[in-house]
Image 1 (cartoon, rainbow, N blue to C red):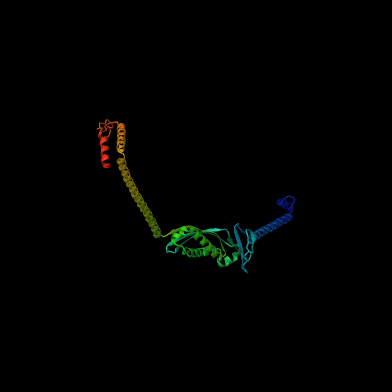
Image 2: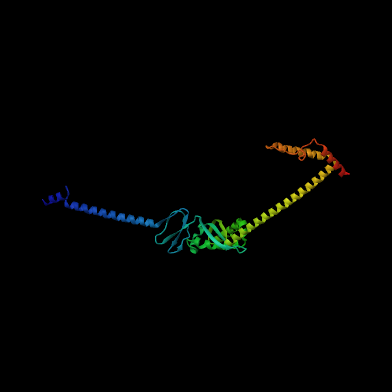
Length: 310
């Protein structure tokens, strides 16, 4: 009766011992599953600690707690390390732009502010040397000092005006010397360019004043040249009028009829002017040479000319 009561209480057709064995089996399976899960998580964490990723455009080197920096340079992708023993050091080997401004002096002792744009990257084959001597922030440690050094050396060879007129030559010299200087630190310079070049306010004001003075001098020279040309023009005009007067005198002396022709020309011009006028005009014909039929004056002119020629 007791057995049947227990069987009815714990399950259909199952004894108490069987159910107890079942519970023990399930508990063992649960413990095994928990252990497997913990082991899997531990394995995943261990594998994750043993792997690291190098992004595109980067390189890495390993530092060992036992032997120091390793000689191998690791490329992009998934790489292996030993946890606690190895520490990856990642370098960006892409060209990085940097703008550096340096105040310096020219050959004629003028203050010049030059801004230089530099594209630099580390030498991928010498990352261990760079890390030993300069660490990962090699650009901040090296570029400002060598740029100032090279700019002061090059700019001191030119006058302030030559820095403007020979800017390409200055840029080439800066690039050549800077590339050579950066190679001593295993740094590769992709491009070097002068982006800005300014002078002190005093020099700028002096240059502007000089330009204004040159413009004024050119304007004065133009005015002088214009005055000379006008004077020459007046001389030529006076000589022409003198020559015309001489020719006119000779024509009158040689041909008394020339005066008659001039009278007719003057009469025609006066008549044409009066004809275009809209007002009524009453003039004396003799005084305006309009009485061309009167030959008395022609005879007087002819007699006067004849007497002068005698």
